[in-house]
Image 1 (cartoon, rainbow, N blue to C red):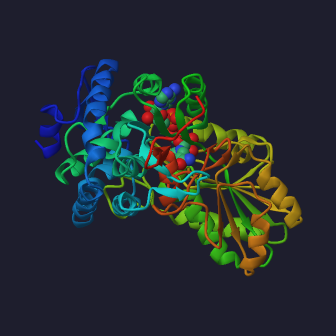
Image 2 (image 1 turned 180 degrees about the vertical axis):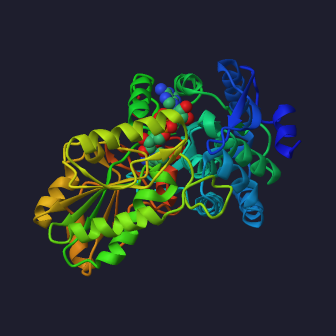
Length: 480
Ligand code: NAD
């Protein structure tokens, strides 16, 4: 029995009001753990305990909150395996992706330690002889709902700053990745000295997520997931007047400008489309290449796709692992088949062995076909040729999404001018579309989300309210 089995069954983190549920490795179909499943009654208990614990936590010297974050970062830095040994089987992560994710979580914790020590307000000018301050105060209990794909970082990038700023957190990870998306993180933070009651992990499905959104004692929701679920959460939270932060889907373009090096561009494009089987919100979903170079680019991309080893990620030789489940796989395959039926050329892939989908390259893709117009969430690279840069920018902006765009060029300053005309939360010049750093703002435009958050200053707005405080030495006198 592993430490996790013990923790899971002694009820340390998992309430289990809805009984237990198996955790399945998508690569093998094997049950790798059994965990408690939370219900709405568990949620009520968690929120009540969080509300109670938060006041004392917020009242502590900031150094104590920072110390917990620093210690948690040190634990994970020394033993990334604590996380990667679950990320690989549970989330189907290749070992490189899992190590990268553990590093991101560590740096998120370090950034949260620094955040706890940052100035948190402004001294304001006033028309009266008084001290006037605008200061950020914690909202109280933050509800975090996270997805399966990068489960640890997409939970921790909300959990760590929310805690560091003096909040308590109730975290509902995706039920397919409750261990790497929640339980391991809670264990590490507890070991780092996080006082009891401040972080609750509720392994459960969408119904407990919806109850978390509706809970009257949870004034702030940080959601990362699909645009469809984000819309439902926005609808539910609107009348409740909650602070809601939505990080949603994407259909991210990589624009190869006419002067770009095609070899380097194909390498960036392959990484952007195939990393973690394309199951990333920032995955490169549209490759735009000048018409006179598109054949060469697509052929190079196809050669790379053919060469990538795909299989059980517990074998480090496999760069890519499985799609998370059968439903997602069927969705990816249907999009590829419909796009080929619409006239696209299949240059590589388009086949699968169980949940292992071959990296796929589609050329001459019609702009209105599903592979070009929808988020695929699979290892599929749709390539189209363009006549002019003007036309390419128009195609980029025609998407309903606006999360991340890549511009590849020999003239980065010219590309910087193009960035002014692109509606996107991120623009990366001379890199592919997938990137995240704890200190950078992150957030999509249009159907990719509401507001830019994360990153040092945005976290204050995201996880705090602003309080205006004035202080004067004597009671102000009035005419009546
Ligand atoms: P999903 O929206 O189905 O699920 C995400 C989480 O939301 C899960 O924990 C799920 O249980 C919960 N949930 C679902 N419906 C809910 C509801 N009505 N109320 C409350 N909670 C609910 O997403 P998915 O398909 O598992 O994840 C992939 C999606 O997430 C993709 O669209 C991807 O682009 C997006 N994503 C976005 C970002 C970002 O930062 N913008 C990052 C990663 C993934």
